[in-house]
Image (cartoon, rainbow, N blue to C red):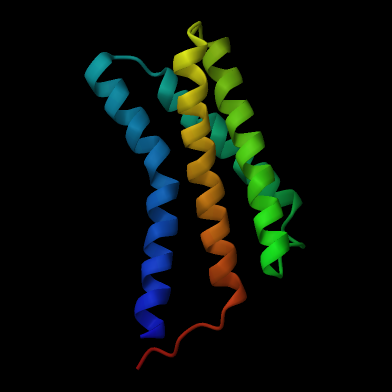
Length: 124
């Protein structure tokens, strides 16, 4: 049972990490618009930067949650600013996408933090 739950959480963490790029690739292939893909790259850079700075922290659930909130903020801001720099002007389109990308990275970081804090199930 613990092994199944561990694998499910691991799968969800990967799914949330892939989602921004999937959305960006769909937009790039359907509309020949690569801005969303660049937003995904920028939000990844922000999430990775926060994770790199906070790698020595995040041992308990409160720290993991706090760092996840910072990941959300930084990834969202970088995604939104990237869209603006690439010529997007509709704030009603930019910020919801940026928030969703930030949420994907924050949830992924949170799930990975939960998995890091738990003992690995024995594979038999």
